[in-house]
Image (cartoon, rainbow, N blue to C red; front, side, top):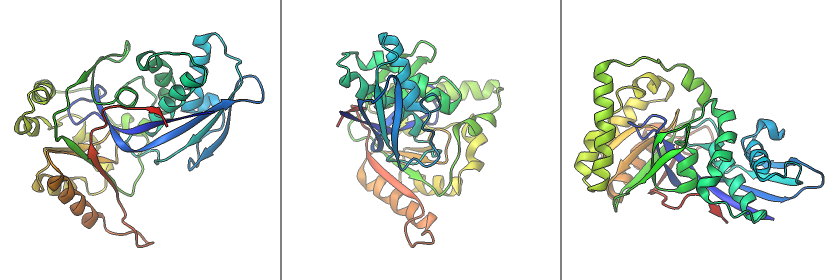
Length: 309
């Protein structure tokens, strides 16, 4: 029996739609792999994953495991999967990717297949794609590899792990709402103007340079999404109010995480991140149980990604 943990992720990072992302320290998903009672893949248990399918062909973890077994030439090997969801899905922090990644990391150790993390990526991608409806690695790759990831080409999974400046940290805010990735992608226009292209590529390229030079002032000037954020902002409760408060508190930048409704801020120190967290709790208030309506996470960027736990 082997258990693996895979972290939640922030994808797009404002200016890198489908090509940039980084993992959080928590939350994340755990997947347990053990010997099955019959040939093939069975999902025996899903904890806190209401609505998720037990059919392995319709589950991100199940598909990822099946693809890996096919690659290894043992498609009928008896495998039992237990999924422990430690984060909600439909929140824009890579829940479907985390389950797929944790599953193949656990299976790799269980079978002693000795595949590298990079070699495991296609299997996790195959699993994640059934939930997102697209083949893009800005959740799967950072979840697996850790650090800030820049993807040159999603089809071939050609990516670079970027330098993360000391002190850089995130705040992720999950408001009381749900947005499915497939629905959030369906509202996006396939057209951009020349001015949008120039602005977005300039910001994305300069962000990479600013990370390597640890230039926080320049990072703050780069995190401006002129393409995707304006189209999705209406899906996120109180987005512009929260963005204004985060910038006032000293955030380097603030935008939507993935398809939303989660939001993220990048910060240079804990004084700023603490103030953003406080502002978020005040803005979103309490639920009918008297608990904070928004879930908030802050930490340095996870540099290691998924692993056995």
